[in-house]
Length: 602
Image (cartoon, rainbow, N blue to C red; front, side, top):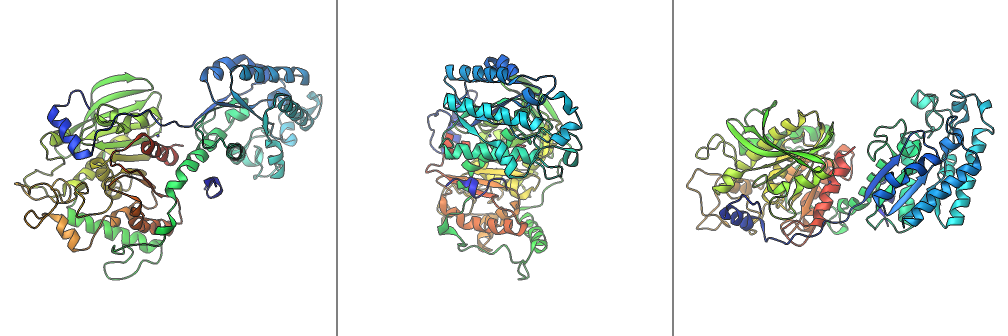
């Protein structure tokens, strides 16, 4: 059963020394050979305003066949029938349409036809004198749909019946609820183009076709080829697969169909909350009963953790950056930048900006050093690069200097006298990185996420939980709760939550002879755990990309985050995927990219 029925509406560094390469290798699991990227869906909008079937025929080679798609969905005829400047007689329309079909058949491309949605004669009469039509507009649309049905039968093609779907939903009509734009719902006497809701209905019908024809499990490149209906005339994102066009809605449906299994709590973990303290109880013993209570309790949790970990310095709310060098890449520009991320401390990172970006979603990626995430390090950790290829602005950051000297973190004001636990200070630095991105015209400040793997997963988790302006987060196998016997879930180390002035304890699992020091043992004594931070994410979405350190039973602590989201009245904001190894792989990464595309892209 596909999740559409559950929820339909509702992306080794050459300059490293051998010492650094060895350090990253030891801390971050076994080096794997690079694999071919996982296949992915591609949905391309090739609609054009004022096009009739002859116009489509003239551009099919350039706009469709050159794309080498798996499937093409054709919708054309509105302008042939209704546009006074594009009128074609039925015979010419039929011949042109057949030639389009022939071209696609010769190219070996699977073809599906969409028939024409009904038009609003009353609205059209406010734009045109109906006397100009040789037949009433509805008659012409009906005749065109008969031709489409005949072409489908003769060529052995499928037709998706949009016309009947709109009629079934009593559209068009003169009211605001019409699925066709009119004065009441758009302020314009349109009568032809679907509303945003109409575009959703078209997407739903196409999605149902993909499901019932068993195409949904296949990774396909789809081209939608047609006139201004395909184009999305009057819609946000017209001419693209973003915004309110039906290719955009279809993309979201397909993404959700793929993501939904990871946002479904396995039945064996339902209502299982384990041996964790209840974050929905105030310090005075009062129980949270509603959202207003939760907002106050959330403040209490946040204040308590900051008090224990150390208060942050003032945020750097208007950071500036220096561009050190620029590289033009395919699809984006890569800038190496320097900026102040901690008072008195500069860092260098990489800002990747897709060409023509304006008000785009963005993601901060964090790791031991910034080069890995741009594709110059261990395989399958190139999050910044892959997300930039998918249209995100990305900022790749790392702790290069302290990784080289094996202290691995940020120490404020100094490593000998840090007043903030280093993992919290990393979160603070990421909050300032958010400020940098939010100030760019290329970035939508409301759509900035953060992600990282292992060390970077811990960093991304603390940053997103402690700084609520991050809109979404994906944490790759950080170890989302404390565990005393797993060496990779090493929050006791002095570069995480076990800071104490040097000389440091010998690294490794705490023992009687080599006990944990700093804040970490105090947190255990107070029976505090990281589920108290996870709940701070609500109602923002997050994904645990779990591996060896975060297996499926991590749903137990995640149940608390599900409860927090219930208070906001939202669902599908807590997800987890699982793999056997600690190292990420193309499949687990594709889930991360789809997560960000679904929740951050328009």
